[in-house]
Image (cartoon, rainbow, N blue to C red):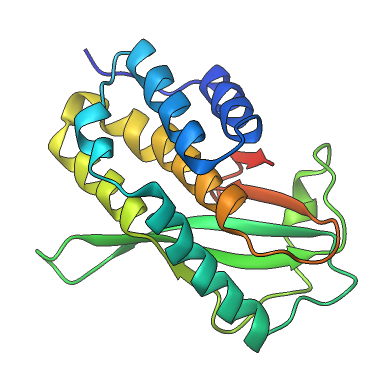
Length: 184
């Protein structure tokens, strides 16, 4: 029977990522939660060097913010997940793009729509996100849960622990362009 993602899943993974002291702890907590939902990912995710995955994202973000600095007026950064379909037969590539805006208001869904910061080289790639996509393809009964809940949780983990210091407070939002997001 397929495992369907739910709104409660988003609340739970937000809590697990936000309350963890380090990436390793967050990953362990997430794997336990996914198992409680009926999806055991321990074998696949045990192969992931999470600190290396976080460092991979941190290095890309550091370069991005160095080449295209974040303007002072930016009050939030949005990390938008994408699934880029490659040439026929060669699969897809998952990552996220970066943009930012003046103010984020969760009661106003349009507050994410008009970024004032939209760097030209805004894409960040991640081997972890690509692995989750492969797992989704090979596990049809867990595909929706993997592509939605697990993907969003992994991206939130990478942003939370991979974002270099900005030197100032800034809201962090990780999400899908269809409107579902996690606020860290």
